[in-house]
Length: 183
Image (spheres, rainbow, N blue to C red):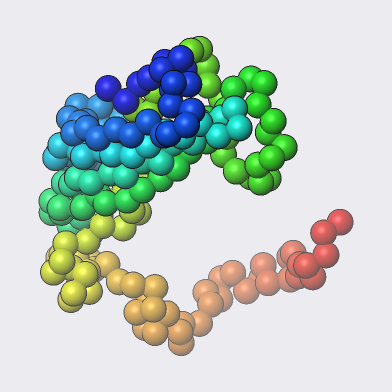
């Protein structure tokens, strides 16, 4: 399941190794992120190319997560449909040929396992803010008895005329202004 020995991969020097599988990842993903409510089977396809002593994997994922809205905790269907690439290098690889900052993954042992990369990229694809279609369309924030969530813009608009607390006026000159110079 998305794991090949380096000897098998070396047989594909002239043409890339292509793969296409449907994976059941719900148990693994919900164990790593308990906020995930469910995961559909994930279609994974791609290729592993041998290039100048290294292996370049290009993987496409399609599936669906059900995750809670960050505003109301209502379940939201979140589609997965993206592609990623990773470079796997051996101990004797020439790392200088890659750009600074490019992620290079060391191959440990005699196999290339793409499963950790697949699960990591799915988790990284979950955005910080998830809204139901209705929440995204209306922009309404949750409210309750004696409380309401407001956006930063709304807060700024309603509190721009507030005067500082006079009790703290004595502290005004306590610290000199930072002029931006780092010393």
